[in-house]
Image (cartoon, rainbow, N blue to C red; front, side, top):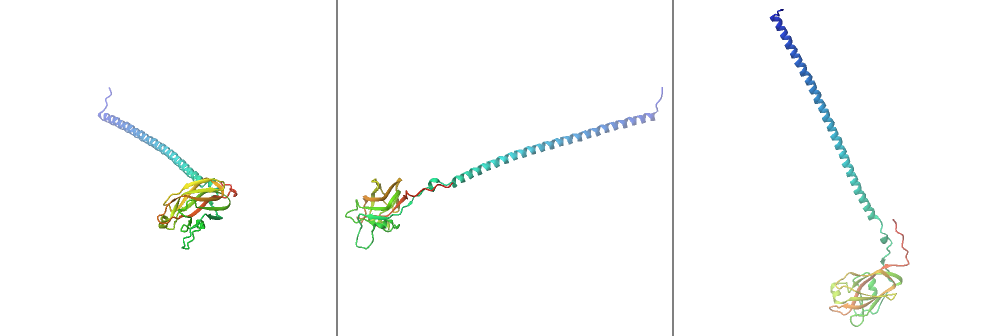
Length: 254
């Protein structure tokens, strides 16, 4: 039997220890390398996921922006359409020839003469001055006294505007009579009665609807609001609005 010396045993033991250390160190090194590789791989995956999220977010943002742009475009389109509708000419207005009709003559059944030298002529009715008047000169309150405006040819009268009473001042307005019921007569024989409001010192409108074709309008006092001082009935202004049927309508420009 071979005897192994103590020295040899020690050397063998040292070699075994060294080999064990080398093996452990190798395993640790390999594990560290694997861990680093794993960490790097995880980081790559995370980066990839982040990029994917960013891409999705960008896509969502782009989609939202596109939707916002579409919404804005729709709003702008609606506004544009509204503007176009607003700017679109109104054919009815463009073809509308209504205007204040020129009056050729004014007739009156009577005119007040009070010795003051003031002119109460019926032409005061068409001078476009509310401080001048026609005052009837008959006995009593002026019932059945009349004025007539003459156009000298057929006109289509659609509205009449009347300033009732003496509109020069409130004192004179209530001092004299004002027309309460005015009877209108036209060239075609038609007769219409209209009641005027009291206390109105501006224009009052008489609407004749689609209009009446006539060469004149007669206006007869049918009832009055009584004045607190004088028994004379007054009218300050008369204005007729309509059109000449001989004028051709111009085509609307679109």
